[in-house]
Length: 460
Image 1 (cartoon, rainbow, N blue to C red):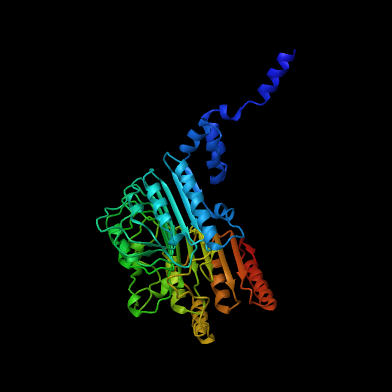
Image 2 (cartoon, rainbow, N blue to C red):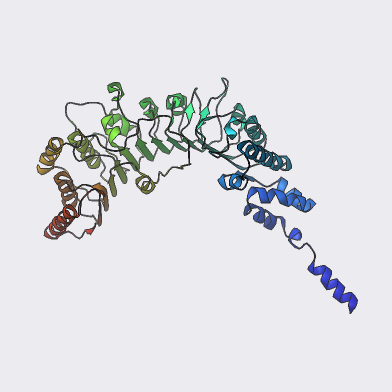
């Protein structure tokens, strides 16, 4: 009996977790922070082997926040560098997913060790590489990055990207996200690229070779960037396009031919543009009611920052709407905010710190733009009979940031009477619009909706 009891006590103390199948041990490590996962390597040979082949190295904000103490900045930096070095030293296998966040209070972007970390990763068949720099000084990406030939997904935040002179391009990249990245030389992300997202980037012109030889790009998002319009000569497979530009100050930048732009993307089904895009269109003696090339595949159309005070912009808005015979969803908002971009499926990744290298940001409409006289011309235009405005596929209209102008009201009525299949009309007012104006607009629209005998659900 005593022997049996002793055996039971020994069994209770056995390391049963280490004897689990390898797949379960991998699942345990995946759910642990990288620092805790690395510490399991001292438990046993089994755990050391499991950690050595662990595919994820995630040095995120949570990782570095655990290292922050009351020590001076230099000591914190030393401790952070040592922690990452120790983890990489214990890891011997391939790294499929790598993320490095450079906190605003730890200047890792100035440490030579950071370059060697990337060198280490480049030799480990990395597939998914993310580096987000929250410092006020951009991090110059070392040439080791361009040796990651098996990369499928690349995300960079506030970096300087300078490819080697003889760099032939990536070959397996499918998705690239660049935020506040400065591109200093010609670069190609390869023939397999499907998604390209750029926010506040400088040097987009250096991607010209990418577009000229490309055939698989299907998602293109450029937010507050310096666009070279020649890039759109070979975008035949793009189905989602989002362009929210920086402020146009040079008249020479107004070189966009709308017919050519639309014609370059025949498969486009999701389009987001802002007022600065409309201001970049090549001046014409008259704005056509409808484009020669119809956007047959377009189902979702988003306008950001377009003012009902600007007749040219409104004419272009109606031109694009008329040219989309299969349009199902129409959205208009005051700025290209995160809500609007999320609805459009083009939400971007943000991180703390990193000043905008472009500048020229705009907080709203200038006083000239919102003058009463400029709005009167829009009111007059929208009062005229609008021909060829049958939107028989349109189901949802979402307009936000309203100020209660007559032009807005007439545009909304136009959408109501032109859309026999419309189901939902969602309207939101600007926070600066007083309650009396909101009530007046609401009453008039609900009365108009009843008189027009429509079955549209008005949400205000």
